[in-house]
Length: 283
Image (cartoon, rainbow, N blue to C red; front, side):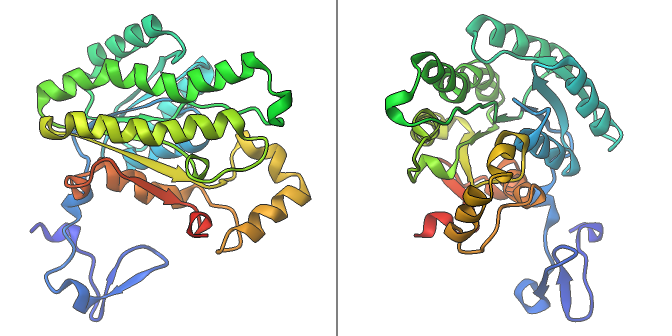
């Protein structure tokens, strides 16, 4: 094994700046190649902010080149430039997940630029919070079409070339609300529950063709999408009290799960949802 991937002291193997694992747990060292994405190409939808930007940069840290996808040209340019500054190849692509034709065109542009897509992170999403009896039909359609149908359209455009390559990783960003309910989350929870079931069906259909499909179910992380809730003391405290760890997630805490599901370390994992939620879904 390449020694540069093993970080050891006399009694510990360093796992991160904050956490240590006893050396006896890994007598031969940690094979960090299992988490190495060097030479891989990842496409991340909705990657100009929040969980998507965090996911894109996490994959870049692990060595992947990144197709940054979104709708704001300035943000696409900014995130791509920041990833390039990390020493990776990156380019921004406008991608409207609401349109099958625009998705097809956008994926073709990515493939023409990078040559292939090894990793897909379906992340583009939106939300609208009102009680069920007040829920507008147009908002329902927007959220379901963005958060659920959009994942289907992008996967349908990307996965055929993964099957040709005989290998690929699809990561669908779900939510704790794909598993648990909460008032005013009608369309969002419905879409995220659908993502979990979609993930299982995709995993079953593509398992023998080398394509692994898994989902991540985050809790509340401090992003622009939930800024209004973050600034509401009552709702903020409710979330803290509901979470066994007593707080919201920090964006860097999502990185490890994203890298794991994109990397060879998870090659025998498919159809699963990993909740990154401070224990919320344990209740």
